[in-house]
Image (tube, rainbow, N blue to C red):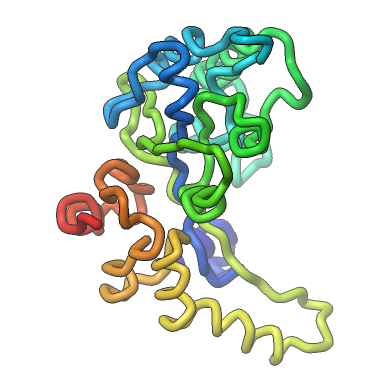
Length: 258
């Protein structure tokens, strides 16, 4: 809740949280094998990811492969936990060194890509054309892509910054909330819907399907990803949880193997 009420000067709760987004690194094992590159491990940094991307970006058998794509181009920035503007004055804060670090990373990714076959960043190439070796995307991709024909994928933790915080993103960067339009004529009905999404019944369903729960209920947290992670361990996916959930890290990382 504090991630929302602290955004308002009067401390009002602006929304009810119902989902937390976890980013991970998906990779196409067939492309790695084609280029003779080692699969990503759980200690991958962004610099190491760039090195891998360079080795995986080339043409083979008339097909142009790209090494690294970002389903959300801001995912690396969210790890640095910086504000784009001053919440008190509205002053733009893009001259902070963290932004320079982030923009340099984006420049390097674009430089590695070279010629583009469309949008600079498009995770659809991972499961569609299957020409992307690595893509940063929501962990729910395990559910979306598990039956995609011909896609031989696996997953590793999101790369982290060298000498930076070992987190998947900033505390509020992956937190989604629901609110009601003050002009709505159906506020009571809307609140009933919002309430459902915050209750344990929905939260446990979401948790079992790889959608990050916003609940602190132990049963909900314990059921995280039971339906989609039966071939893997949570340790490989989420060693670096969002800051606001790190008090659950030991349980998720060390205690559950599917």
